[in-house]
Length: 341
Image (tube, rainbow, N blue to C red; front, side):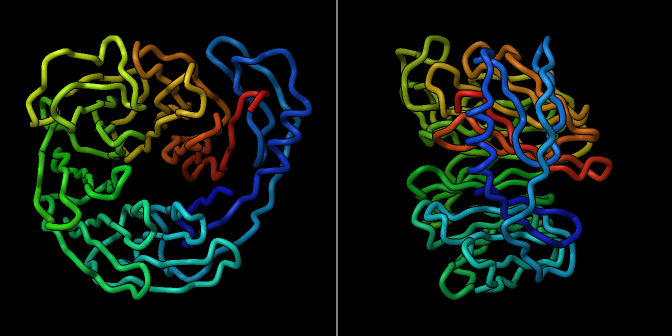
């Protein structure tokens, strides 16, 4: 299942299982290329080659109605039982991922709610808002259990680490901050040279790194663990390994550049389904999706098919499967996978 949200105030849930099976059955001998599956996928392009696929129109499994303004973010709970949405109507909502029923309204922000994520136990929800705060919510009752006066500009991204003990937040003030979930203490603050606005933040799968997307068309990977550096997926890698302990301030280990991002908050994600092809996936304002090799920082592939800026990007945690969404002149959600997924 995949969930998407839109400025029309509606969230949609998509079941792409059938399309993945059809893509696998129709696979040809192009194992390193990614072909689109799912909504209106007529053609796509890899770095230097294009390979058309039959157009497939996918109908949503569920439509989630309830917000009265646009929805900025949508998140699945790790248990896959719930979906959370963050809206310009200053609220969040909790939905059943099975039936689409609305369970809980989360009210307390005083401006647009821009980002939300569940903790690994699915009992807490964190949100970031244009009111410059980060809030922590009890999923069961909708009560706000903590408010962090996190930033001096809108909060554009939040995420939990792998065990839920830490929260990361990013903001237009250019700062990326790590918070202790239990105490609300700020553990680390990192920022890029020139202090460019932060459009998205994400913990690496092992929780030791934070990926930050900034409005200078760059992605930066910060070591926020202290001590010996390890690969962002949990294994030591040449180029990231250092035999001497690092200071606990948050060292920028990698910078990725090539995509276009200077106006909007474009999401990025870790693609870790194939241990031999670990990538960072980024949206871009030129309408393409960029795949960077995690270690070399080289652009290994670009995916073309959207007709407007690509801001929404996510990747499956165990499959080589990418979901992307385009802006107003596109209005399409696309799913990408290699033929052998």
